[in-house]
Length: 218
Ligand SMILES: [Zn+2]
Image (cartoon, rainbow, N blue to C red; front, side, top):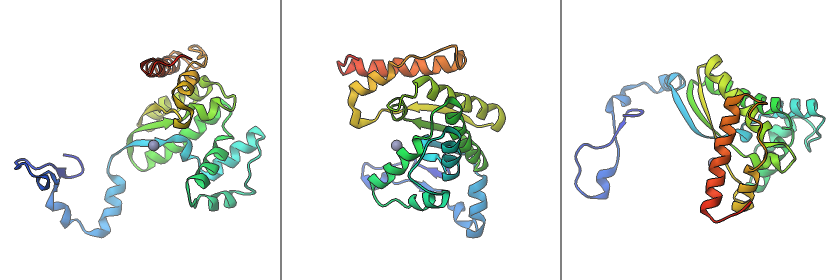
């Protein structure tokens, strides 16, 4: 049982019988109690694109720290642009945000800002998607990305009590060769600790396997 939803115990082979039932006692919860109850409820966040979690304040802070100029004059202007109207206007903000991520600490700070918000919402487990190609295409080494994110995951467990995992994404428009090539970036197992190195190596092996399955060579 999850969130009071159960599947029916007995069913006849018709589609309508696959509808979930729910615990009717939920109906007795006063509506005004629900927001607090939902906030307190432990949650798992299973589809979080971490680059998309960047808030305008952090984008501006990182832009300043790294001397990167972005096409928005102020935090407010950037926040207004978040009311995107189509995929392209979303991607414009996404890439402008990603452009300020250059060093390992930047990736850590991005993940940590999200993880603190998640912990405040009582998220106890999260799986963070990340797009290495968005960064390797700008000359940021794969290990910089993975080490920063991995360190935030490790700290989340010890400091926030949140278990956090990473899921590597490939950009579909770059195809399988792009995915396999990106995954062949050199990874330093020593630089960010053996665990982060192992994490990165596992991701690289997975990418290699996916490429091999499709008959691709880097
Ligand atoms: Zn997605």
